[in-house]
Length: 439
Image (cartoon, rainbow, N blue to C red; front, side):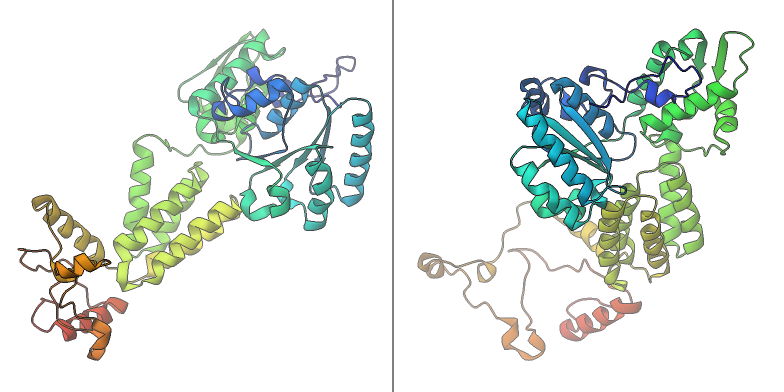
């Protein structure tokens, strides 16, 4: 098995990045992903018994997909073969299968790790099917894309998918402090991380990126003595990038998303675009932004442009499938559309008015003519009696009381006279005449 962890100590000129030097060798050394490799997790138990199935690890960069694959291989002492979906083809896969057959004859398992497995084409994936199905090779695929959309269903059905999460701030801090304490180079210095050093904010849950930032800071720091202080200014110099003030848990998070939504509501696509870019550059979860726009489409656009919800939901799905950085284009598409749409909060206000009414009258009961009557007894009791079927009448409409028993009919929905909702307003006014107070 090719060992990722071997340091070439004989050649002192060989440069090994900090993230590589600190890569865990055992499962117990991995920070995060407790839901997958915790002591009582099914995967942990399978690893302990050596009966590891084929797996796909789905998650953002730096969450530990590759590290987890290596650690599994170490735990079960298998032959570990790593290939990239971008650089390998069917010929390489066949060579690996031949190697796996040799390993099996000699009592050894083979783990095939495929980075960016979502980039494997159908013929490449098909070439793996038999060896995966028979257990000749244990496939471990890594992908930042949703495997449901990108991996061949036949191959997907032969694997177990695990969704890895970005590391939390506490976990990133643990990774950084562990490197300061245990790295053979860094531990020769007294390194202090100031609270204003935005390592977590800039790494966005990516452990590899956090260690790269730490190493860059170390490389440019003044080393005239053994004490090094890493603060915001040093981080700025190290990464040559302005640190954007943004706390995904604090006031700046809520203030910025508030400014974004209000810019959409105010029909200003330019301001909304600016806030979008600030959030993305600050490491905000793109799905959070997309989710807020789905809500906005119904709350603030509503029936003035009913397609807004369809566009927003499609954007959310696109962001799930594509991921950053390309998903930023999908978000920009939706932002400019929603900001440019006519606006109406009439549907949202109708919901709030009806909710208040239910709070005051929680025990409302449907009248008999609106009740379901699936049995003869219910029909004898008067259920559905005298119900008027609208499609039997002109305009597919008939005046009827659809409100609860002993409830004075009230109007909750007041459609505007803007865009598509203007048509709704006119139709409802024509049908109900003076029964409801449409504009």
